[in-house]
Length: 289
Image 1 (tube, rainbow, N blue to C red):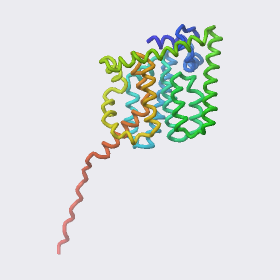
Image 2 (spheres, one colour; image 1 turned 30 degrees about the horizontal axis):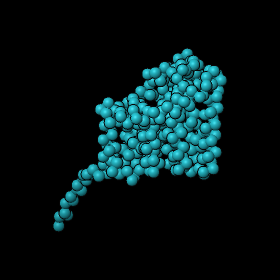
Image 3 (spheres, one colour; image 1 turned 90 degrees about the vertical axis):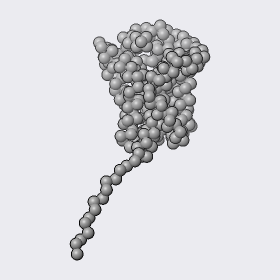
Image 4 (spheres, helix red, strand yellow; image 1 turned 135 degrees about the vertical axis):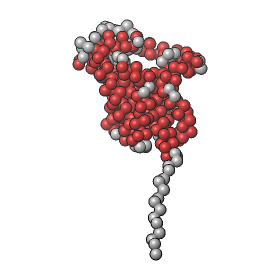
């Protein structure tokens, strides 16, 4: 994958001609610091840890609404996704985004103010997609409007500062990235065409496989989902549209908090309604007179 080659190059402190990947430096910097001689292995270890942490956050969130066995099964839907496995096992930075999203939804569920503040501060730097978490924190978080604006502004300033440092280091121009980012709007038409093609359906199927069917059947119970989970789904759809053809599956996997929660509710409903056989009570012989 070309993405993996770019992130390995960043970990080796090499200039990237691709302005989209050039500023996603958090994971490459960690790998550069601790596994400079073996960056591919460093990415693997780091991504396994990040994906495991994301799964733990989702598990903690689900335990608020369902039992442990159901929560574990639902988390396996996320961990068993083709895209999660590929992103975790290759030099990609998606696992950091998984943790950011999972941690945000856990913080929304638990009303953890410091975690929501960290989300606003780090989201724009981890990956541009992190900005889509801003409305979730603003609408459903326990931070005040003033705090949201303050932390959000600092988060954007941190991201701009990181980009300025990268530009000074490599002698590049941030305007290239801004131009390329705006060009994502041109991907909407291609994404819509892909959604209605056999190839597009097959690509989307790879995100959650047969669990899409459970999700579709169980979405009749959508009112039981928390509002943040429901509001997150159209935001993921927007990200899918902006990605363009070929990337819809990777963006669809970002809906994993809502998908895992919905499947957990379906499983809990099924297990609760399954017939239970009760052991017959032993018959006591009547006392002889």
